[in-house]
Length: 350
Image (cartoon, rainbow, N blue to C red; front, side, top):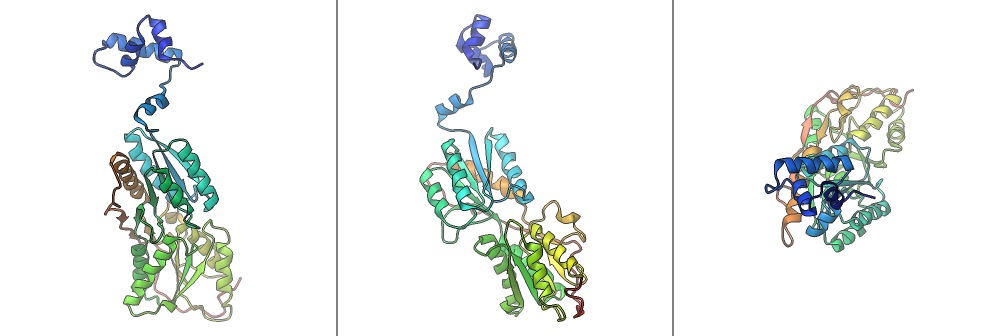
């Protein structure tokens, strides 16, 4: 049986109220009594009953965060950003992984709500909008991280995907590239679509048509990226490649792109320049180190947590924060260079 305040009081022959106030360091309890009570509580194995305390204030002091891929370093960094703020306010985080599956996503969030979560952070799978109804009906604050549903009014924090795509195109265009492949996650995902829109927007400003960018959609969980890109490159065997640079939806996808380029006997950046996205912890360790877009995920998490506590403590419906969009950063490394002619017999060679 758990040790109670009464057990400590009986051990010391004092009142339960004295024990309770000593454990809370109340000033009307003398230092010697406080020390004795705490020492006895530790010896008996007493643990605070936070659930009972939280019932009094109608809060669980717990928040849920649901991501699409728990192995993705970007989401780990977002989690750490949220955690850094939650620790200051004594909130606990409950983490769930949806695997880009809307059914799992709904089940995880319902479980968190059943456990009394005071709020939910969500990187949505975006395969349907059912989860929005669940969250709205739950009457708890929720914040979208990095992805958002078009036409839906929700609180969100994101690094600007449009601006990140714009920066990638600006960099490659400045090197002299005029034909591109975008290796994308499924375009129903808002971040995949907005990165493409930002990329194309810059090119249009430079009077290039949208047809200079080819799109290759791949599974966002990473399977088949190497095979898909390799198949694309090999389809031009014996002919000049129609692209000189590849823009990747993520650094994770860039790993598969590197592998496919190498399998086809080509080199980065001598034959094909590559730009990633996210600036995850492994991008600087790739060979060559990957030029990428830093979405500042730790800061995304920090700002999301601050917004969440504002919503929890605010009365009534609050507008979406004007600081919901964070500017990304271009990180220059060694995977991009000025384009040069690719020998027709080199593409697709073993």
